[in-house]
Length: 261
Image (cartoon, rainbow, N blue to C red; front, side, top):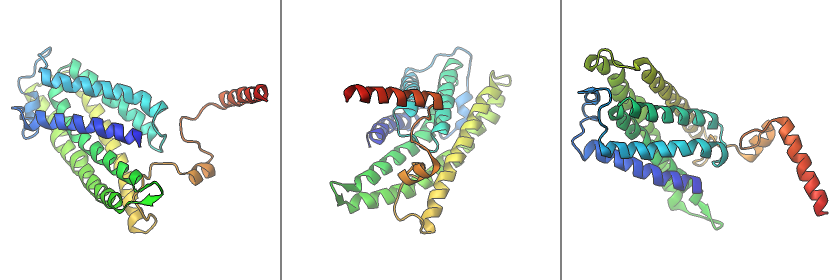
């Protein structure tokens, strides 16, 4: 619950700020994606409001690398999540350095909205049963949140992202700047990001299939390890330690217990 509450707070603020930049200012990037490369020049000045967004996002994803590995609950997709954070941090840092910040704001806006819905829905799942009492309102909200999250994931990440971002970076960029530097590097990273979005969408499809087939009676995160599954597969949530290190830790714990006795 604290993990989801923290992420909900950050993504709500970051997405709201991204929405302000795209719809509350004169930036035309959302309605006119090719404009992200209009008047592009190497070493051009980064507007302060966009620089603030980059500072916040870069700091968050830098922290997320450590948090995913050592603080957050270990899930079936945690390795992919680590890869996602590496790709995201690389895109943020390099797009700022090479002045592709306009398209970066569009990428962040199209991704953060789904994280807001995901963490809000998960909080309501956790709040359904509290104090030994079932709360129907949280159950209804989590079901609605799951539906809107599934639709918005497809719409923002699998429809608008290729239509607006990939079209602008793969096609429009060459028209505005024929010899634009690092063309293949940035587009390769964006394509990797697209593949990860498809990978996570498969989890969404799996969840919907389980609900329709009656294999799941209530909303739950299908990425989570449950106790029975972990025992059956011989898995433990968290980063798996090498066998030699585990034996040393068990030996050390045994010596500590002996001293206490």
